[in-house]
Image 1: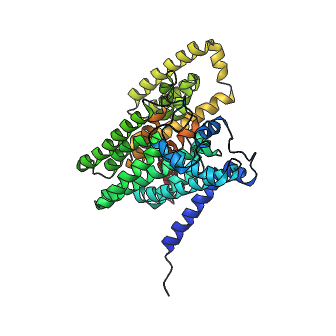
Image 2 (image 1 turned 90 degrees about the vertical axis):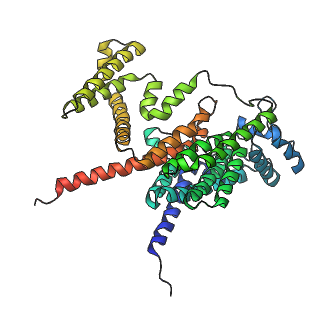
Image 3 (image 1 turned 30 degrees about the vertical axis):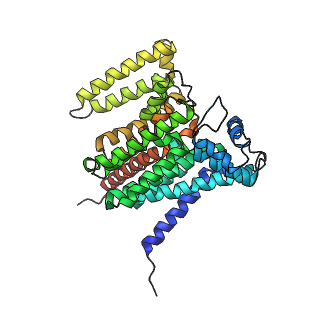
Amino acid sequence: MKARNPALSWVGWVWVLILIGGLWGARRSVEWIIQPPQTNIKADLDCIWIMTGIEPTETFAGTLRWWTGPWCMEFIPYYRPMTSTLWWFQYQLFGMEGLRSFTVVHLISHLLLLLLATRFFMLLLGTRMGALAVGLYAIHAAALLSLPTARAAFPVWKDSCDIWCAMAYVGSLTAYLHYLRSERPRSLMGAYGLFILAISFKEMAYTLPLLAVLLAWYEGKLKSQARVLAGFFGIAAAAWAFRWWALEGWGFRTGTNGAWLQRGLLVIGGPLGILAVRNDWFPVAILLLITAAGFAMKRGGGRIAWGLAGLGLMAWVYASAVVQLSPLDLSFRLLMIETWGLVLWAGIFLVLFARFMQRRERGQILGYGWAVITQLPLLTQPIGSHGLYFVALGWAVWLAYALTDGFAILKEWVVKKYAPAG
């Protein structure tokens, strides 16, 4: 009789827990499946726009035109041929009154993405760290620090394109990781093929060559991968040229009146970036001054303390100029619980980020790079938070390392505090 493998059993339970976390994180979709608010699939304005291209298409042959042109209303042209084709098949199967079935497909797609992401990050980062990262992603843990999460992609089926693109994207990176470790041509062809598939789902996939560079760096093979990485960039250039021809230009692109700068601050700064965008510099000023005082008490921290104190005073002056409150009114804010709540919120992130900069852990750098790179297409696009579905995976990896580091520090402190003398 073959003995059970306890490690395999443990990993199996991890996968089950991640799927349970995924169901909890997507519970709005579960609610729609159990008791949908309506039966018609035109759940919002975006769904109505989508159906203007799909509803009139009666035959599969009619869908082929989406590979050489837009599939939505003429004044809002999109080029996402695989996305529109899958929606067309769902429409043929479930009809206009199939909101529940559309939502089931949406939910199952998300759960499959979680499984694919778990496999990829376990291979890349190790079983424990990979599982922790995807588990945090599944339950939207990053929301505690107001970092991007996948929550906004539920429950409406129109955001399935984000999930399907993410599945092909992660699949491509997984195949490329296998190639980096085995150099099998079949793995590389799979990576290229899944990259093309991801592009046909959504424009987010054009960031994949940059993540492939990051992945090669993480594996320590960046210099030897120049030709292979050039292949990713070549595919992206050819696909973009074809897209330009199909749409006769940019397609749907309206800009955001300079909001790219604000979105950039939110990506790289987390809660500190949020306060900066909101022009709420008063908590930032307090936080900088507190941090300066902490460095001043450390040996050799004088220069850092003076620098932070100077930044804190500048933030204090800027806060008074923007909010246009007197120094006395600003001082009264020091007595408000809300102010200190914001200081604590931003302070936790500052500590985590300072440790990140100090440790320079390769896996955490990869997670942060993932978040920044995948955010690039969103900086100038008028999208909702559902566009952060894939970005959130990077932040989940970053947060997994931050929490692991925090627990290690706490454990070390407890051991030193309560270890028996001698």
